[in-house]
Length: 196
Image (cartoon, rainbow, N blue to C red; front, side):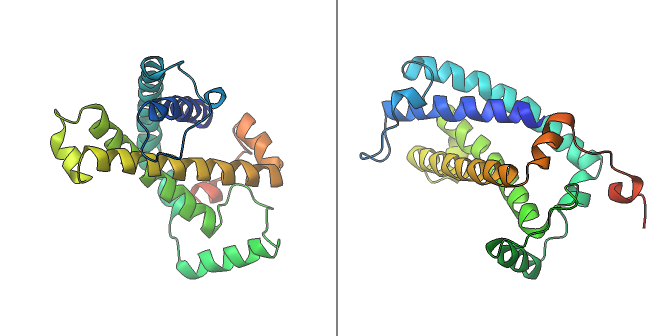
């Protein structure tokens, strides 16, 4: 699911930038064509919708799996502000422990919860932009059609920021890259919540 999400996100971001270039929100911001896919708004929309369905189906499977197995509860909860601050302090002093890659620190938990929320808002704002008349109530949730576009753009920027941090941290702890390719280390019952 991780790599399908990665592929879908890259396709959505690159096609989204091409769509954005057709009707910019910020007059000073245009994305170079070498960073985009689609060869114009029409082609980019096709790529965007294809990747959207891939991401939606994969994302729903991920959410169902995470909730049904209790993985989200085990891996992401609880998150205490004091632990987040301590983790950030350790990271800034380059003293963050990486011995057990099956355990998320407080900052990782917060980032993963945050990105799940951002992606849900992205889906909702994306539907509001895609079908502003049919889903006018959804567009109203974001203030207007233009408000939906702005929220969708901000969400994209947050996802790009998350991806940069995610990749940078993976490169700083190379054993996580191997785990992402192989599916990770074998996890015993204690890590699964079956032990004490």
